[in-house]
Amino acid sequence: MKLLVIYGSTTGNTERLAGYIKEGLMESGIEVVLKDVKEASVKEVEEYPGVLLGCSTWGEGDLQEDFLDFYEKMGEASWQGKKVGIFGPGDKGMYPDSFCKAVDLIEEKAKELGAELISESLKIDGDVDVAADKAREWAKKLAARLKG
Image 1 (cartoon, rainbow, N blue to C red):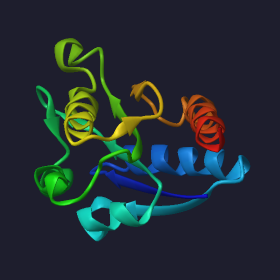
Image 2 (cartoon, rainbow, N blue to C red; image 1 turned 180 degrees about the horizontal axis):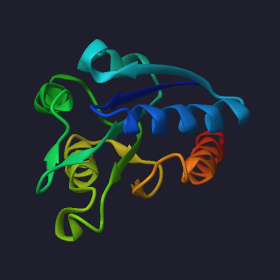
Image 3 (cartoon, helix red, strand yellow; image 1 turned 135 degrees about the vertical axis):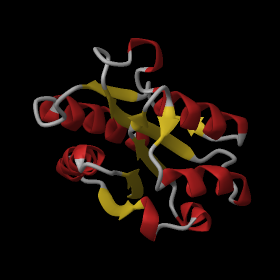
């Protein structure tokens, strides 16, 4: 099985988080195509049985700027029955009311478009490197569910 992992990253946190997730998936025997959202097209999600989307939250709950265009165009692809997982870093201390709001927004849109969420979304508070093992474990759980 091959999964597409698309992430939007400004400071590198979401990119590193996507890397840890890729490691967990690969350890579970899943082939992974990792793409920065700037290099991805919405239509290519149709080529994969499953897609993971990663986005950090900015300010009071905004999507990471590179992810905005992809988010707006999500309806141009068929998500019906697509296996989807969402992940992202945030900062509970500085933004308690909008912690990982971008993850929630993407999750809601994916569901509206008919995607099937394979797991509870992964929300990382603070340093993503400290949460590397948590990200790998989340990915391994996704892999197990996908393999059925």
